[in-house]
Image (cartoon, rainbow over all chains, first blue to last red):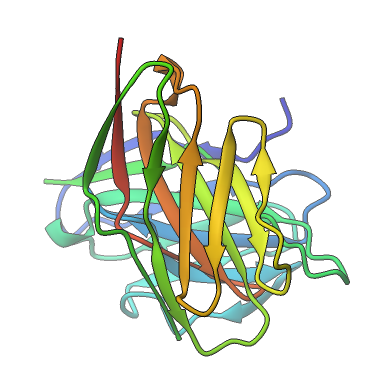
Amino acid sequence: DTGVSQNPRHKITKRGQNVTFRCDPISEHNRLYWYRQTLGQGPEFLTYFQNEAQLEKSRLLSDRFSAERPKGSFSTLEIQRTEQGDSAMYLCASSLMTGEGKNIQYFGAGTRLSVL
Amino acid sequence: AQTVTQSQPEMSVQEAETVTLSCTYDTSESDYYLFWYKQPPSRQMILVIRQEAYKQQNATENRFSVNFQKAAKSFSLKISDSQLGDAAMYFCAAGAGNMLTFGGGTRLMVKP
């Protein structure tokens, strides 16, 4: 299966700790997105990359959140000094942006973060 | 900026019957796309159907079709011949080439 892969699937951490999530996109996809989904809500956009360039990061929730995609392949999302309000599902998606602008986003299964 | 509203938190349908899920949106973009995604419990989101805003013809994918009313900014999803496997959260989303803006979702229950 060559879908979007996210690890870990679940992460439990204590308040104040740092956490890092990984996303491996579909191999030929040039765009990668991060979303946050809280219980009972739709996903909320955080940031996205085209290849290794982070093109939008103003939607990151605070300066405790950061993302990288160093070689234009996998990406990591880090949350520093976690707070209980960070508990959510973190979703990654990837797409192949073409000149036709189709840009269909395919989602991974997500990483569920629980901050105690 | 875009907003997406799904006014039905829950819907229920009898197996083999037809159900319509509502979605309204607002956008300042002139060229945009609309999507319906399905999210089964504890599983990843799957694209159900996609509509280009510049196309007047409503998209269809097997048992799934949309009613796209551009002037009214309405984008409803019709599921025909509902099956037990259709039970899930359904999210309407709008995008203009990069980020997607999602509605709050509609939980669809299918009764056998």
